[in-house]
Length: 214
Ligand SMILES: [Mg+2]
Image (tube, rainbow, N blue to C red; front, side, top):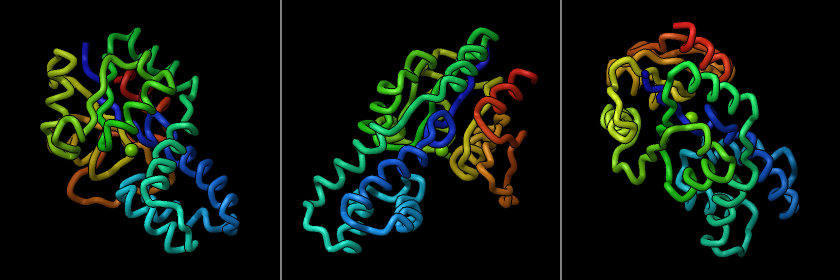
């Protein structure tokens, strides 16, 4: 029974799609041009930018008087509310589970948001457990967060695969801990010379298929 260590944002769940959906509606509500969505996506940086900094950037650009704290709340809630679990992803996880793999989410992020996304989408029914960097006190690519995930699932780390879209956090993390990995390319080409993914695919379903094929 090997572990399947899965990234959350833009691997199991389409976070960019959710942020874009929220962003388009928000920009419209403040009278900003729709083309500003590309600016907003770049400020967001796949959620890596601190939410307070994103809120400040939005307030500055549009001269908004909304209190930062309200905007930060809206950034959190907007992404959560717009995130959906693709039924095909749920199906792939069920197939992996049937084949004896134990799916565990390993995510860098805030507990409040990641936990809400996992539960609200129903993803919690398809994974054995999840480890969020904020509560773990350590983030990917540190090998310690993968070790913690294995400990949580009461399973050995040996034999596990890591699946994710981040070259540094997911694939670099897998390399650091000595595990094989699958990279979701999202239209990018691999450019890091320090390490490389074992496999490269275009989405979660293909990732599960390649892991199961051995
Ligand atoms: Mg990701």
